[in-house]
Amino acid sequence: MSLMVLCEFRTRTDGEATFLRVARALASAAATEPGTLRYQWFVTQKPGHYSIIEEYVDADAAETHNNHVEPLLRELFAVAELVSVSFFGELNPYLREWSSGREGVAVNRPL
Image (tube, rainbow, N blue to C red; front, side, top):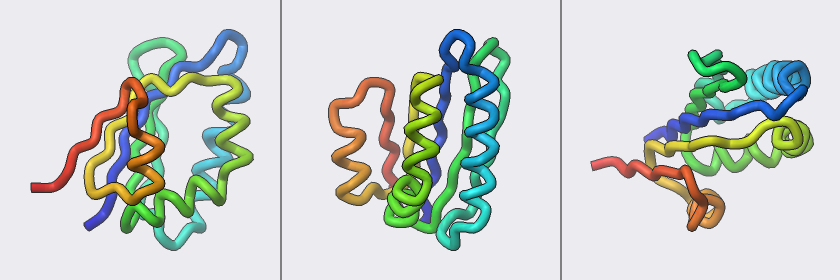
């Protein structure tokens, strides 16, 4: 079963141009990852807020993605704050540890 992830980010003051550049670079990097099924950014109705829908073949592919783009993620988090993240599917130990006790995280497991 695949793992879907929905995240919302809020850009910091004067960070929007950098955020957009890095978000596009992340999407480009994800396009070549064999375990990434979907990686699509959206502009929300709130100024400075962006959402992303990610889908991976499984949680291990999501972990591989994060490791692959780690320098870009550091750059993204320098100019934006993660508002919320929702996981839909089974998490691996890496994602369970990452999400444990973190505010704004929802884990939705399959029936």
